[in-house]
Image (tube, rainbow, N blue to C red; front, side, top):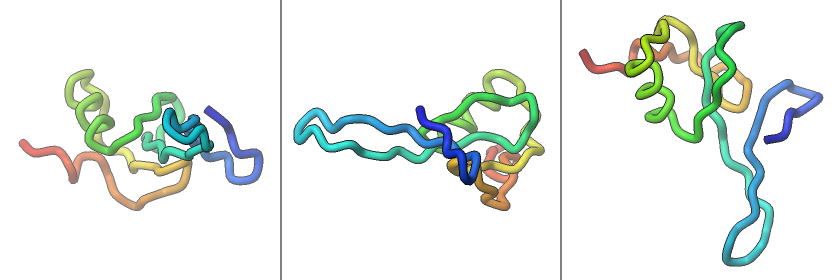
Length: 77
């Protein structure tokens, strides 16, 4: 995982198993000072929040940037 010194965001860089080219994967997290986990999909992030009891009233970030979408709005009750 690389940290961008310019924007502070994170992205996952991996090598394609077929062609060997470097690829970038978006990472999703929460805009919360003590939440340090990143996920490759919003679905995985939401699952983590619901299973582990994390407060869903935080905004989702994509590569460290705001999405203006709160996690609670994506949880089905």
